[in-house]
Length: 303
Image (cartoon, rainbow, N blue to C red; front, side, top):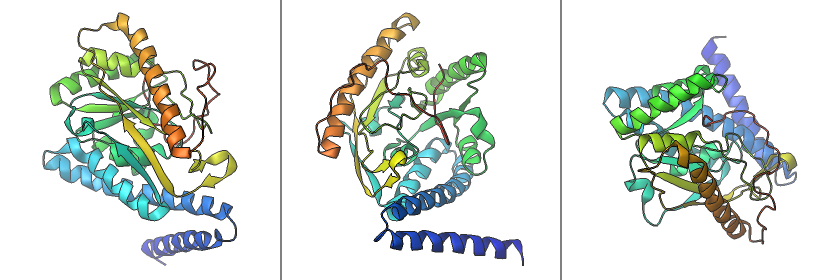
């Protein structure tokens, strides 16, 4: 049998198993968790492959800056049908459509944040990512071709140089970046923000561009891996007002980081209460939240 024949059998079986698990979920709720996980990985693979070709075409056409936006939107559409999960963006001042360049920052909960980016990712924006992702088939190829900024977290000198290069690129190309300042996923059931790394704030100050906080409600009612919960549902996103950085220096970064985190934490609690329909308390010690575990794809910032 040819390679194409084996691939056809594999993908046919994969899709058949996923559909069977969805059917079984009517009687066995946890089957829905496995079905949506399988559907998500297949969707991610398909859209990453699409992104590789889209990035090549858009780069040749002189529009590399919208490669990640185009691929993100494609992923949001595919996942809507594959899993029934969507994110609803509240951006009353159209910051996503008008603020360029900027450093966008957001809270990081689970692997589902990739889908969150699919719904809100602005044009002419790229992510930062661990250098180890660069060689991952399809996803890494797409990220490299679409202009992602790769940071070697094991080498602080390289990370600083990457940030300096990113600041120059932001100014020269009017290219925004999206960073998760927590640096890893929190995997919490209640609204929590891990301590922020300062890379995003140093980058914004160096480039002289605004910081735009983007807050996503805690969505443990939709995805909570520890309890094998993966449901369909709508998750709210709130785009906050831009925070200017012009005139600030490295000496201001500590206060900028603290005040921005405090602002986002308050909005996170309020947005999560609205999403889950239950009261939620502000974390007693916001500077020492629950321990986080990193795994899988991690779009992140440098210290």
